[in-house]
Amino acid sequence: MISKAVLSRLKEIVGDKNVLTGQEDRIVYSYDGTPLLGNLPDATVFADSVEQVAEIVRLANEERFAIVPRGSGTGLSGGSIPVESSIVLVLNRWNRILEIDEDNLTVRVQPGVITAHIHQAVEKRGLFYPPDPGSMTICTIGGNIAENAGGLRGLKYGVTKDYVMGLQAVLPTGEVARFGEKNVKDVAGYNLKEMLVGSEGTLGIFTEALLKLIPKPQTYKTMLATFRRMEDAAQTVSDIIAAHIIPATLEFLDRTTINCVEDFAHIGLPRDIDALLLIEVDGHPAQVEDEAEAIFPICKKSNALEIKIARDEAEALELKTARRSAFAALARVRPTTILEDATVPRSKIAPMVRKIQEVAEKHQLTIGTFGHAGDGNLHPTALINERNKDELERAEKAFEEIFEFALQNGGTITGEHGVGLAKKRFLEQWIDKGARLMMQRLKDALDPNHVLNPGKVFDLSPKCEGHLPGTQKEALEATPA
Ligand SMILES: Cc1cc2nc3c(=O)[nH]c(=O)nc-3n(C[C@H](O)[C@H](O)[C@H](O)COP(=O)(O)OP(=O)(O)OC[C@H]3O[C@@H](n4cnc5c(N)ncnc54)[C@H](O)[C@@H]3O)c2cc1C
Image 1: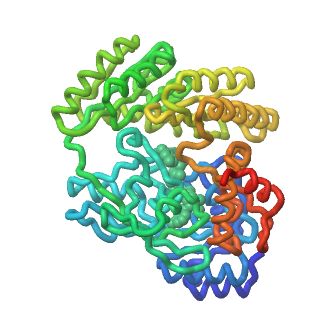
Image 2 (image 1 turned 90 degrees about the vertical axis):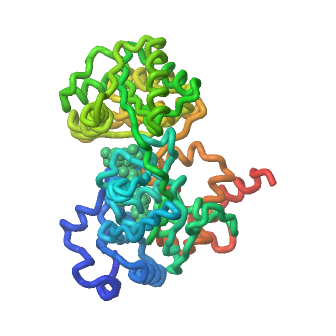
Image 3 (image 1 turned 30 degrees about the horizontal axis):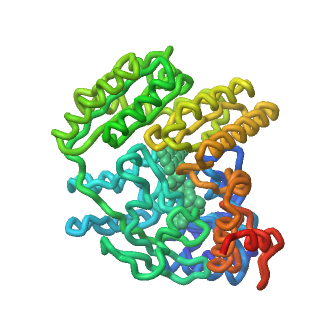
């Protein structure tokens, strides 16, 4: 437990009202969007300047307590869940857009800005920040950078890392560092910015970000295609891309998810189909027209039952509701929603979805699957009651089998939600030994006292004092020179 003296020092740094230690406050910050995981922090601290953050990190090194950075707590892998003897450092009040540079096409933001607020601010000026996680109306840009968040537009436009041009971060030992700036090309030194993006709050606390913008697409067209068979939907995805069309959005819902969405949103989706694709093309009006026209026969060729094309913005929004409300629609069915992130090469989508259905049947579970079909990034979502121990164990077994299948098919355990606490054991099981060793060495070198979100992503081995623990020595020896 953090001492009273340390709490007093924290209050001196950020002010009394920005350090919460009451039981209710600790409970509120004991969990994030990840089910089944939680832990009480010793205190919750709100900071809104780089000086405050740096001073808190230096204090943590002196007094040896852990810091868990937190944006909005929407993470789905337990990244902002408190660890032993930790404070949660909440950054979502530090939320100003500092500059939109229309000459250089950049936006400079504080770490706690809500992602959708960036979209709104730049779109008013005819500019575009593409990453659009499903949680964009609540999550922060700091959390997006820490998780390298993806979104519905990832297929055409890429993910968060593709838009981070510059970062300011407080290092785990309390120094402040800047990485990158407005130069489109910059190869001076190691590419440390890329190392920090996706580091899940373990290698630095982001205190400012410079993001790349692009011109806003002039127009878009939204379509919804329904399929009796999963394989037909998967074939459509492959055929669209083989026709050299890269839609901005190419999203998928399975039968369970379609039925839950229909129960929730009443948008007239057919209930007896296996799959639905939400497709959106954007860009120059002529190109959009051409691509939409080309997609129509591709869907038909793969036996699409119906293809709806939105005639205006209101209809487009309605079609998008099917996908945007998938998580909420599934989450209301049972008390516990375990949303996973198994990802496979695009060509393996149909076998992956079939496997998920087989596994669900075998373990007598309801698992709805939806996700970014164009990226092969699927979200199998188990609907259970965590108080039913038997059901919980079956769900855990089911996900083990799902991940195993994904990995055997060239996939990965997470496409966008990160490892955090939730996927640690899967990472340990599958990661290349040399890569695992390098992660440990990086962490030890940059965070010698293990104060920054320790125990996230991978278990820290006992502090190495000039030597490597046995298993790591073996890993090093096994690594080719
Ligand atoms: C309904 C729903 C839909 C979602 N859809 C998507 C999706 O489409 N794509 C996707 O990728 N994710 C999605 N997510 C997951 C989640 O929203 C993202 O991971 C998001 O990036 C987390 O942002 P946050 O501000 O909530 O961060 P938090 O959950 O607070 O933190 C996430 C991680 O970032 C670290 N962190 C936070 N701020 C900082 C900072 N300033 N400096 C350093 N580290 C920091 C934390 O320590 C933690 O490890 C979804 C979640 C929900 C609940």
